[in-house]
Image (cartoon, rainbow, N blue to C red; front, side, top):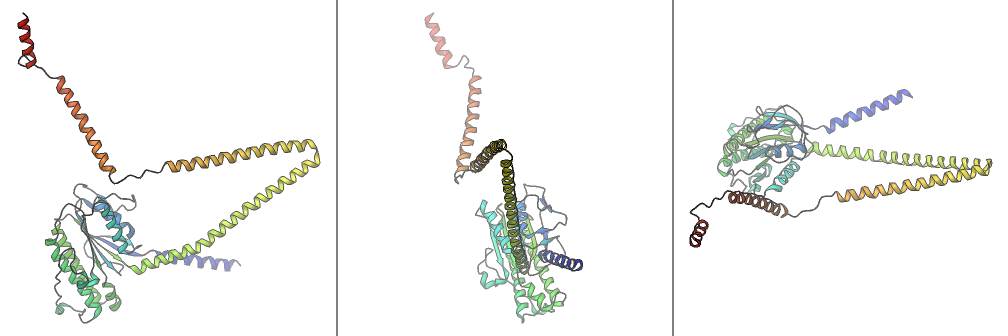
Length: 407
């Protein structure tokens, strides 16, 4: 009996460890460039769902979730980055990038969700920002006229390739994405006009994973693909630094959508398993309360019958006590109901009012008009108090002439 119980507990422990390993999805978040006003330090893990907060904070936006990640610090709030360039590399766990500040990334959402949240954050303040998301896997034909203008990629010389080949579909798609990265880098310095408004350039690389699956992670073709990607990232790095005169934050991160879906499925299964257990616990607790109430009722009936058998005086005392207790119970119930009503009223009254969009404009007009009016009135009062008409004033001359005539 004890041995079977230990085996069962050991199996449950293994399942728990496996669930933790499955939920913990690892990745890389690499800061390729940041201005001196934004510093990245340490090696604390960051969740991908917090990347929107990190990037928004770097642009000077208010952070909605404070104290979550301590890897970023703002040293100069008056010289913040004018743009964020983020390169999302799908389907891989790690980035073999030689330069940059690297942080472990917990991939808990897809990159498009992060992009949508960050875009909405910027659109809340201003609709004139440059917000560009380019999925390089769509190809040049699908992109058409991009926000950077017409892109003219330069074909890669096939003779310079060692293991990759334009004749293979997976290799061709990856090489086209690399060509588009170079085309974006060539177009950025001339097409971008900094206007002191925060911009976002979101580039998605999606064809690296098929290369790794086809040839293997340690193959010559995979190493060549990573080398070409690193070279393209360096070109992007230099181009946007030139376009924004260094006031730009450039990052790259991995994103494996399959792991994100697996995390969601594991979480949903766990919630489904926990739901029946919670319902059973609630039913057991309710049944326990009902049993206690029944036992209390039986005890009260027994004591009442026993007092009836003793004497009538005890009966009267019992009735008096029961009447008092009933009155106390009714009073307590009234107090409890009144307390509930008061709590509900307080909750309703504490809700903030809904203001129109013109409220801050009108408030600022009235506020500054009042400030200017008060200071103007104060200045006029001081000027009047210090006035000295003198002998040459019209008031003095008229008074002096009349005095001479009277004399």
